[in-house]
View 1 (tube, each protein chain N blue to C red):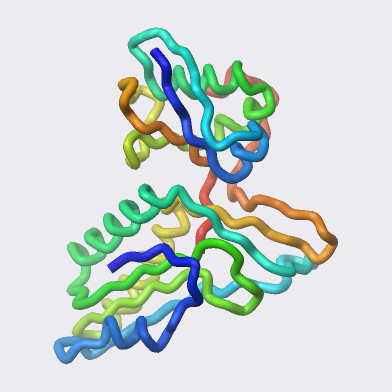
View 2: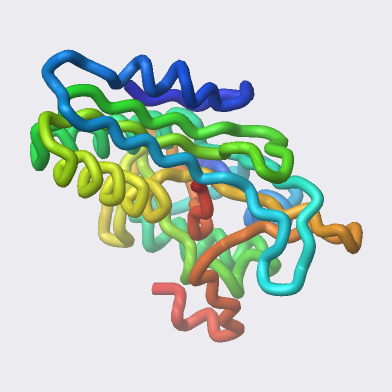
Length: 147
Length: 81
C-alpha cells in the first residue's frame, strides 16, 4: 500500500497495517526532519511531489520488493506540504516471516525511494532564506552538455 | 507540434510557471525537448543536464519519442525521504 498525505504519519497505525500472523518480523523506518544540516539550522521543511508519478513509482517499488523478498505486508507513505522539525516525512514498513528479509527489504525500499520517487524538499533556514534540495544537481554553463 | 512540459521545484521557480508549452518539429524526442527547453528558458539552461524527464509517469531517456498527447515532466534531482 502506498500513500501521499498532508497529514502527520501515524506510526502505530502503520505498524498495525503490516503486522500479520504469518510474519515474525516487522520493520518500520521513519525518516524524520532534521534541525541541523552541517551548521545550518532548519526551521521547517516543505515537500512537493509529481503526485501521479510518485504514487506509481512507489507502487513499482512495493511490487519489486515483493518479488525479491518474502514480503507479507508493505506500506510506503510520504508526507507532503509543511513538515515541522522532528516529525516523520516518510515511513517504510514491511513484514516478513524472518527478520533479515524485513531489514533488507525496508532498507532497499528506502534507498530506491530517495533515488526514484519524484518528491522534492525545500529547506526553510533559520536565517530566513530557502533552498530546494537537489542532490547531484550540476550547474553547467556549457549548453553543449545538454544532449 | 505543441508539447506541454510540467515543471517542479527549482525548475518551476526558475521558469516562473508550473507548465511550459514548446513548439517542436516532428518527430519529437525527449532530447529535443531538453534542448528546446534550454533555448527557450535561459534560466533553466545550467541545470537541464542534471534533470530527468518523464513521459506519461515513466522515466524517459533522450531517445524516447513523444506524441502531442503525452504528458511530459521535467524532474530535477529528487530529494524525498
